[in-house]
Amino acid sequence: MPKLIDIANQTCSRLRGDENIEINYIRPIDEANPDCIVFVSKKNTKELKNGNKAGAYLTTESLINCFHSSDNLLITDNLTLSLVKLINIFKSKNHTEYYISFPESILKNTTIGSNVKISKDCILGKHCIIGNNVVIEQNVTVGSYSVIGHNTVIGSDTVIGENCTIEHSVVLGSEGFGNHRNANKEWVHIPHIGGVKIGNNVSIGSGTCIDRGTLKNTIIEDGVIIDNLVHIAHNVYIGKNTAIAAKVGIAGSCIIGKNNLIGGMVGIIDHISTCNDVTISATSSVTRNIDKPGIYSGIMPTIPHQTWMRVALSIIKLDKITKNKI
Image 1 (cartoon, rainbow, N blue to C red):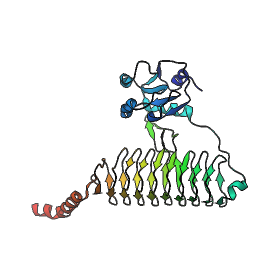
Image 2 (cartoon, one colour):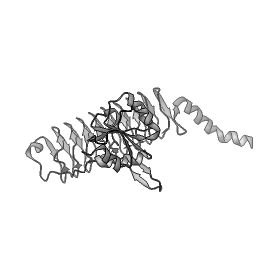
Image 3 (tube, helix red, strand yellow):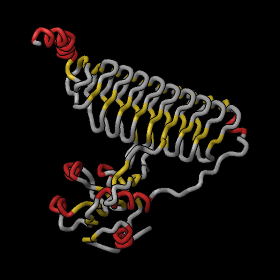
Image 4 (cartoon, rainbow, N blue to C red):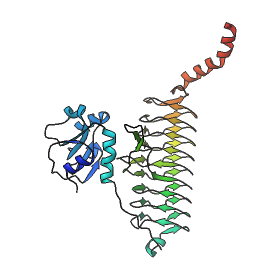
């Protein structure tokens, strides 16, 4: 395992603390332990008070007052680019070994279509159905009685609960759209080492893509139903029994409450949260947090539904009003 001094050199960071401490992996701040290094930005400094102590922290000069003098720090001028280098140090380089032919222990419990590739370390529950041309990568668990449709890809580090239906041409665990511009304004991709966790009794429609998390998992809770052609980005959390209609796009790090109803073609920008029992009308744009249950509509930006109805009525009358003033 690399020593902290080696990590400092590879991430172009200044080290403060024990240069010989060994670091085994990178973790989110709420999963910190003495063997890991944690990424700390302005957005998550409050979590330092609630989390466990990490072996080391990657941060910036402006945030060092948030730490104890005994903490081991890697201090960088460009936190995001150093994070990219840090993730690449610990990102798994393992080659996936797929079954060439399936053992009887799998075949007696599972129905498997043609031209299927399943990692040898995948765990399949009883009475699963796997369609044609499916790829299941390393460290994947599929719960009992779950169905995976044709041409679907289940990326590494994905957990699928029991009694789930994953329709045709779904991608779970693809790389998230996390990118950062360097000093030359060139795009640098931020590697993603989180996974995807799907609860029990979840239905995911054809053509839907759910990205893996950057460090944490993207989570879909029990009883969620998702229509066709939905995109759910990295680090999103979807609460229990939420329904999402077709062509919805949910950007990174959103938290969607329980029992939400999200209409077709809704767009939700990053880091938005909604409370429980929210309905968002079709084609709405959500640009601010929703903290009260109810129906929300609109594109400029989302507001309570009754307010939107009055605004819409004013827009309809606007042409007549302006003509009278000319």
